[in-house]
Image (cartoon, one colour):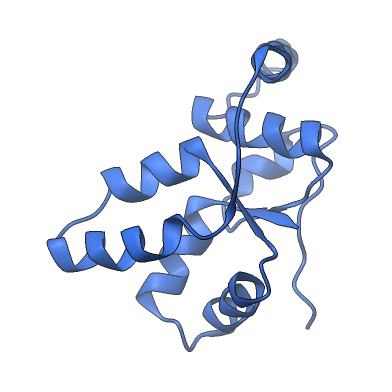
Length: 128
């Protein structure tokens, strides 16, 4: 099971036949994708048309949903605090995604370099 970041969902929607799109579709079909609130909200919020919205709504309710709890929010704060102390700023939504991944022992599939800055976070590397 992995958490796919918004960047991967968007790449999949734009070009399902690409390497990223094919890899993601395979993970989606096998039930290997976990959904988290920030990704769901970012995807739906960023839709530019009813067609795009419908494309996502039909796919977002399939993956297992991982919810936040108090432990998650403490970890979000800790990650943000530690990064800030080293002069590193990571978007809040990426901190929430990272905390959920760390808390659940899951890698994150992303095209966003911000996640590389999060200590203790495992990143998913597709097989070449």
